[in-house]
Image (cartoon, rainbow, N blue to C red; front, side, top):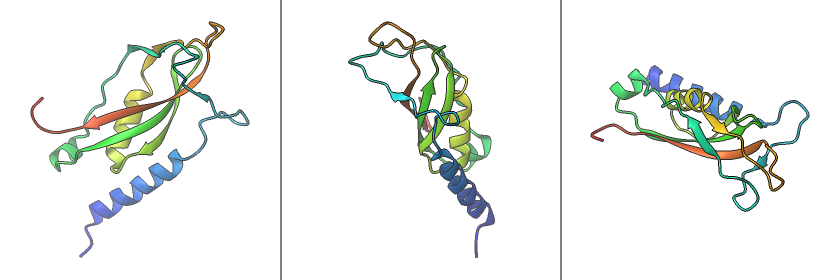
Length: 130
């Protein structure tokens, strides 16, 4: 017999990953430049919102890693995210919601100018003792 809850979760996860594969550029803009530690200042996180572990996922013992590509805008706000890896849609949603609220000091290019950059964030959802 098919577990409808797991099937629905798998379908949602598929759509989250499929939608997440879209470009991070806005409209006709090119994709942001990937962060380069040789030519750019290090991204400095100045406000972090921790992800909220989804209650149902926690109760079901679901653990996992969500990897996101994120864009730090010139003003330091996270402008967009795209799913690179995430098996459980609930964890993906929680990770994207949290990372979307993070604030960084603006990343500076080699000329010292604020620049928009693409970087990767890994969020781990683990149960048990800390």
